[in-house]
Image 1: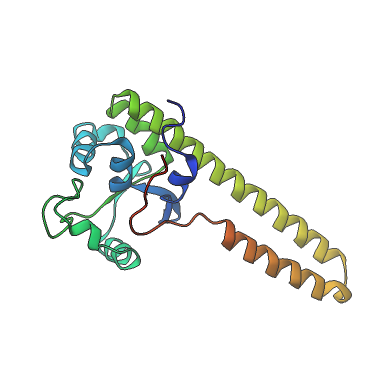
Image 2: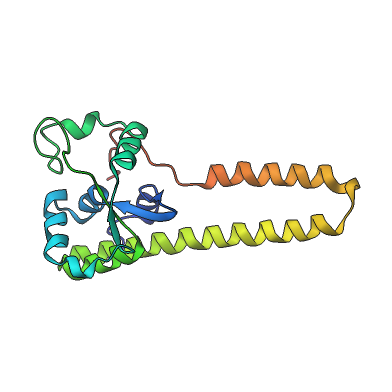
Length: 183
């Protein structure tokens, strides 16, 4: 049961808000196999476990920006159990940091919640390792660049361009639309 959810599927749902990597309540609810309403009710019953650096509600501007970035037609379907009847979600989403996700396992006391939390923490760890590696490489290039004169400027500019392209390719992309799970 340790591979309940592949890490790369979680990585595609991690977004950056307010300078932090977070998962939204609706994505977490789907991963845990509960409704968004049930997840948020469990959190509200245990609100003392979720200080602002663990969880925060999106501002109206952030929620609107998020809606404009992602297709929301699927959210207004009456068959989507996380969002109720036609019209979609009426409240602003909550965002959970890595610490907030870790705290959710104590609030959602089930075997699935524990296994999903393990997978999510692994995804956050992989993302942090990737960013650290990229930052180390950038620092080494800066050091080399400062040691050599203008004859290597073009070489360094080409390397920087390649690094930026590679970082864009490696960044997890959130898939949109219907995704059929492999058997």
